[in-house]
Image (cartoon, rainbow, N blue to C red; front, side):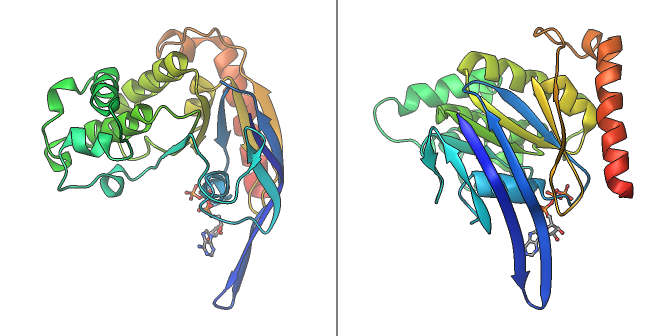
Length: 250
Ligand SMILES: Nc1ncnc2c1ncn2[C@@H]1O[C@H](COP(=O)(O)OP(=O)(O)OP(=O)(O)O)[C@@H](O)[C@H]1O
């Protein structure tokens, strides 16, 4: 279980004080897929960094499986937006994927993860020989191979084209179902949040609080055409959109 209790983060330094997160409390059950959506600059990345143990909150706490997060927790992986900076250009694809692993299971885990993201054939390529979408698949494969209990994704598809993005969204849902991982996915794209998640947590503008939490009661087997055309999908995205518009004005 992932718990965020009374989380607050104030950046203070160089003569500038920014109250990024005011007070956030939410909980994800084991195996749940939740999306966080909010206006630009509302502190989504700040929140993920606190959850990942990369940033110390000003107040409040994060717990993963009951344990207080005060550094990167065991069994937690992060996929960042900028795949270009998270892959090592001098390592081949399979070496990048195997980087966080050791032990006898390493070759099998790497092979399986590359197959899961459709990159078995690219194992010996260097990242710079691949398209942006393929590079992001490598980053996802690295996270999968690590067999995390909790996976955090920070706008991972923001830099790829629309078609690749749709493919990657479906890939992530398939991976989530297969691994049973607890997934917290940050995006500023309302449609993406509703399409992917079981739950959408809507954030206000900074200083950030939670405006709304929606259960996404769409059928579990989603696909880009029918799900996005469903009246319920339109209703849910409308509700999130209205909240975010209000948040931007307030
Ligand atoms: N290291 C830092 N030092 C000072 N202020 C920071 C720092 N990192 C972020 N901030 C400020 O905190 C606020 C939230 O930033 P954050 O990057 O978390 O938002 P975001 O929702 O991820 O933004 P976007 O949607 O534009 O990517 C912003 O006002 C930003 O300027």
